[in-house]
Image 1: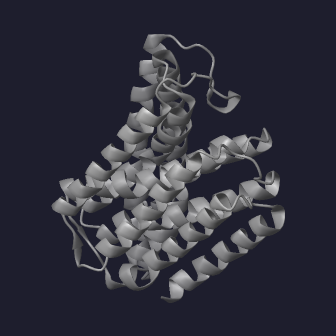
Image 2: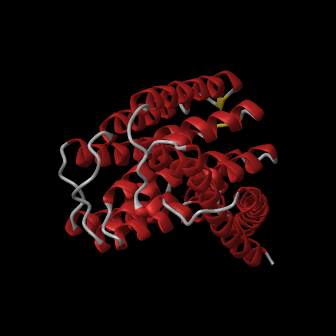
Length: 309
């Protein structure tokens, strides 16, 4: 039954995120939100909804290791697994260089998380601080893009949708995400206890990869159409939202207890991976197939080491 709960949760998260994302993009297009905000914020936020619901559900029911491990593991998977896999399909060599600003914000978010996990708990004040930082970032991003032409790429353009259908997609997506999050966390927690595996490892692996399925789907679609902008914007935006919004909101509602392993191993590894991606983006080296293959190998090694720590 627990396996069915995990499988059903993954399916629910995938389709819920897809419907929510489609509805959110249609709404953004109707409101004339600039391209940069659509790719980095709307897409990044939409694909991060599973992480939000899973972490919130886990924290409220006393599974803090899953709540925190989900975010840390998702950020590592977004870079090593998703960008690595997509880079094998189509080398990432050209993207909107304005993502440089957002890359620095991604690094800053990871550094902030490393500082926070040195304490025994991420409390409400820290959560409020993260949400304030995110609001400042969004405001600055909006001001920077204001006045620019609203031209959506094919990857984020959908057929014209009626207002009623758009609302149905958003509400239906949210409802499906809630059910999927509940199912995944309950099944994963039960399995962890049954096999003697720590909840932190389950959160860093199974739950993290499961909640990253929307990013994977978006990335593969962008790679197949040979467009790097949406792929990079999606991952950078998602990693920022995962830390500042998901952990911020979750800890405001329910403070998150921090296990020692997060400060000594898991978050430092996530920060190292983040800096590696930042170096590739800021130096315009990109992700060729050889680099993409190395990222996938590193993710495999990382997963094996997780069980040993």
